[in-house]
Image 1 (cartoon, rainbow, N blue to C red):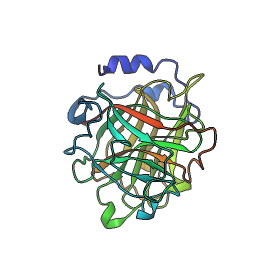
Image 2 (cartoon, rainbow, N blue to C red):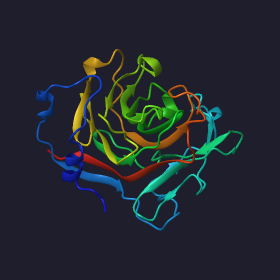
Image 3 (cartoon, rainbow, N blue to C red):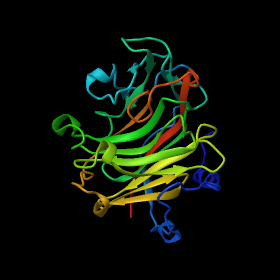
Length: 275
């Protein structure tokens, strides 16, 4: 059963912010009215592949040019990606050599199938955990093949270091503020972990700012004035879901990293503002 917005809001009770705490005034958002423009509820038979009219894949290793020192091969094999028959997409990272790498996983994207400029982008996700595990829900500008990264812009709605499963990050990358110089903040749970339950990760994006939410709690607002370079968030972006194994952000898996690792996605929904 898909959760309602009321349930999502209720689940947000008890969350805290680890850095960049916003004042109560920031929570007093203007009234917004949203119209659903795209969604995937991941309904289907167990082991069925995701809808090919909505998702495509990055295939291969970091040698393809889009890696971050990661250690997996991305595939579209049913061992790495499929529906669970209960309304969830499951991405699975395996500690098994494949395609020239020691691990395998999956990276889904809507590139070439769906993009949108501005609006609300959200997903309800249960994350994996463990040292060297790097789950993410993020976006790239549709002009990436023309101008390359980071000139295309990147919005990380959620990424997490598996060795610190109580803290997630919301970040943007662009010309002059990418990689270790990106703009963003972290958000932490008190006496809880993101891998224990589903949480709704979202952004609300317009021409002047990007707001970041966990379970409808606004924990960060990034405006044009906050960016030490060009604001490149004025074009359509596509969405990405993946689990990376290892990489610059998380380091190498250890003997304390259990496998297989699974990221469960209940839904992905996109809205446009109608007022």
